Image (cartoon, rainbow, N blue to C red; front, side):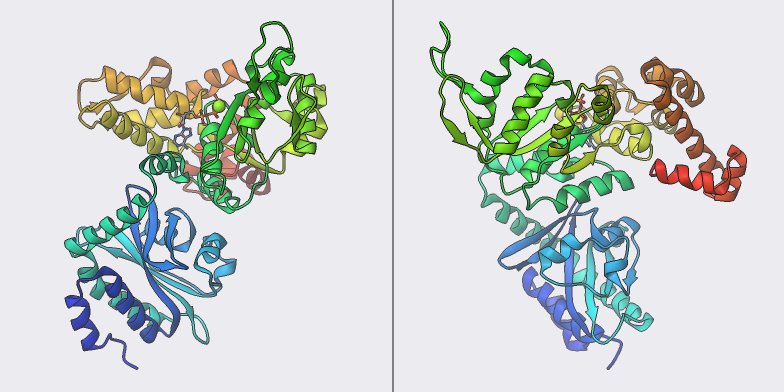
Amino acid sequence: MGLEASPEFRLRINEEQDPIRLVNLIAKEGSRLLQAEGVGILFFDQKRLELWSPVKVDGQLLRLDARLGIAGSCIAQKEMINVGNAQHDQRFYAGIDAKTKRKTRSLLAVPLALPHGEIFGVFEAVNKRGGDFSSRDERIALTLATQIVGPLSRTKLVEQLRFQHQQLEEENSHLWKEVEGRFSTQQIIGNSPRIQSLVRLIDQIQESSVDVLITGENGTGKELVAKAIHYNSPRARKPFVALNSANLPDTLVESELFGIKKGVATGVEARIGKFEQANGGTIFLDEIGDLGLRSQAKILRVLQERSIERVGEGLTIPLDVRVLAATNINLLEAMKKGTFREDLFYRLNVVQVRTPSLREIPDDIPVLAHYFLDKYCRQMEKDSKKISAGAVRCLSAYSWPGNVRQLEHEMKRLIVMVRRTTITEDDLEEGIRRSPHQSASTEAVGFRTLPQAVEDLERRMIQEALLACRHNQVQTAKRLGLSRQGLIKKIKRYEM
Ligand SMILES: Nc1ncnc2c1ncn2[C@@H]1O[C@H](COP(=O)(O)OP(=O)(O)OP(=O)(O)O)[C@@H](O)[C@H]1O
Ligand SMILES: [Mg+2]
């Protein structure tokens, strides 16, 4: 068999105007040349951070968060990936197999780029018959990729594909589409491994109704995550009801949560409780760590019995509610102190999601800063702005006690205050502008407990040393006065 696609194939792909037929043609020729069980094209929607295939699986359009899986890595790295034992590859993501109804053994992925370098998709061959993809297959795939880029990227065709994609989406109601878009995992910005594993976890639990405990410091996106979980679940079109436990005194908890019958006390109007409002959907118990002990007992009972009783009514109402709880306090410590019930903790902690502080994901700070800058420039109808390299350095080095929320506010403030196109160091708020070393020692101590401040300092020093030593662990350890084992332990602990 030849290395090259048949002349007939080359002729046909250049003539084919229908995108689905074109993709099918490529799939057929690709499978033949590479002896693969399946070949497909995934298109990259940069705006939505989504990979999608115009060919349906079980009548469903395949849509994936573009950061997931080997195809996602192929896009991010702009490089061909050839994997023999996919199930054991770190980049492999089993959720995609579940969607494509296939078990991937071997996989060959080639990025598809326009002449000026922009990646618009991935060519993927799955499961080589009788072995792995060879270097010969790699050459075949690369050649094929160069041949199909032209036909696939012909503007009219890509536009047509986009249009079809949009049309399919519009089968949903407008309002729904907006809600879904606003709370999908793609709204959780960041490319760091920590954010990737967060997105992966949300995707993994999307079909189930497990209760989830979301922990993380102030402003790290706990509510954003809760909404992404709800709106990516089968309950998405049922209510999402948030309850801020911090503002809820023990005395009001029952009527607020379970509802109350009219006339229980003079002047009392009938009210439906939050749990009942959320029936069929999701209740989000925010700041659960601030709940009083009496309220904790009440909530525990609901979780155990999955039913409620309205105050003054004596009637049991069965509930089908998923519980998502969030807290920024350390519940393990609270349990030790006796301010948080252990049994409630274990009930809530079926799956735990931890949202990272900005100090843990410094590489994502510029990504988030640019994201907010673009988003709010557009929203405020201002011309787009840039951030100078120096300013980016300051943003990255700052310790961000208020995390993403603080960064978001700072970017909004800058858009309003700075007239020039480029935001420079001098425009930044005083505290952010200060040198990294200063902020590590002073800021960190000011608002944190001593162990937290020490952790921050450690993390930052390790990061700086790693950078300075170009990730050479022996040198880094020496520079920090640690053993190599000690350094590795800390790198693991801080998930660096
Ligand atoms: N990874 C992220 N990508 C994009 N936006 C984010 C991200 N994380 C947080 N945000 C934004 O930051 C702001 C704060 O997020 P959110 O309210 O979810 O945090 P929180 O953890 O609930 O904070 P708090 O503990 O103060 O209640 C929101 O505007 C949210 O959209
Ligand atoms: Mg919150």
